[in-house]
Image (cartoon, rainbow, N blue to C red):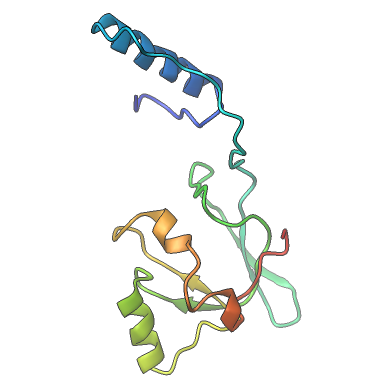
Length: 138
């Protein structure tokens, strides 16, 4: 299963599904099947991170791992100041508020490791309603 990437809808993903189906049938499961589901799938696009100066000039372009991908992130471009939000948990956001730091108009840098990436990118009370940058692809 983990021999290589097998994104949903990819050839490797279909081959993996067939392999699992064959294993289930080989184990005696007679009512096993696979069928395509017409669902929108996240598409991996080019990801770049650029430090931009106050006049919009590019100061630095950082190389990113092309395999790093969070399917739940909103597509598009976002700009703003940077706020470190630890793991992005409610208690981390409360700590920011207690220190007088607002994420309004900023991008929040979060660590991985506590919870899933899907939980970290889900809408939160301190989200768009309070003025965080909106991706321009919406």
